[in-house]
Image (tube, rainbow, N blue to C red; front, top):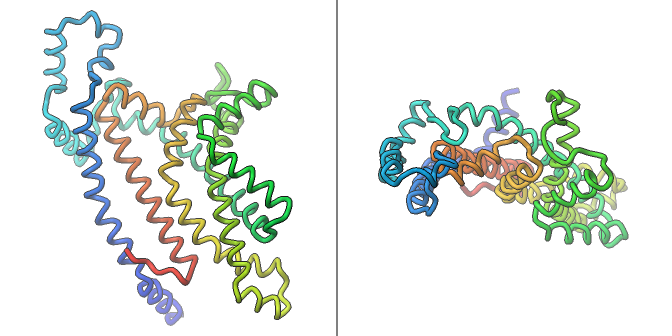
Amino acid sequence: MTAPVTLRRSRFRDRGLPGMVGFRLLTLIPVLGLVSAGLFAAAAVSPFDPLVGYLGNRYETTSQADKALLAEQLGFDSPWYRLLGRWLRGLFTGDLGMSRTYGQPVSQVVAERIPWTVLLVGVSLAAAVLIAVALGAWTGMRRGGVVDRLVSTACVVVQGLPPFVLALATIAVFAVGLRWLPPAGLTDAGADPDAAQVLRHLVLPAAALALSQLPWLLLAVRESVSQNRSEDFVAGALARGIDTGTIARRHILPMSLAPFVTILGVRLPEIVVGAVLVEEIFSWPGIAGAFVRSATDLDMPLLALLTVGTTCAVMFGSLIADIACVLLDPRVRADG
């Protein structure tokens, strides 16, 4: 039992994975530091006045002297690097501050909304991956056929449409036209958020987000399967009498998943952006609405945490995709 485990660990090291993981984790800290500093510096030169979000309708009737006093009391007139330092100290001590926009602790704002975003993104991504792998493998093995041409044409058309157009189209067809599904929200008006209500309202936003990512993923699988289908090992397996289905499942598809995982990792930032747009259009109570409102109000404690958290999630997602690519394809070696 000891020898196989030792061999697997040796291959893990020989392919450079520990070095790549260590390097990525080391670069995470300076990247997040630069993102934080850039965000606070950009907010300092922004034409938006944070007092607008704080005062609301009273902004126009408040005198300049009162505005100056409020800015001093709230720390809005402090240099951006002091605001950054104050936020970093709070971050390391666990005090994330108060959100002016919501009148709640930042931790509470995030805790109430992040599960709904995770649910939406998780369901959408799972649906897109399953459809892309299944349909991409089918069309890749039958390249040039009628189904392949129809799927490829549809992918080219859909990938040219931004997520908000797809979202509005799904609402127009399935909510307004056919009246099959609700157009927005987490539940029907006045209804409790039980599983049935949430799932029914999840269908359209999840479908819109999945559809926005599906063409790129499907075409990546199709192209990779088509290329691997013409490799020498496939011809050798056919010559030995192995049926095509077995070859596709055991050899072609596993070899084709590495480029697919790489594409998935590269497109993580677009998935995040697409989720923001889809949540806003469907009034989904995720973190996107908080992101948008914190940006327009310059609610820095909330905006900084969401920006850094999103950056961190994208970088970790990219790292996981690279690790999966190395493990799936024995020809790939991690280079850091």
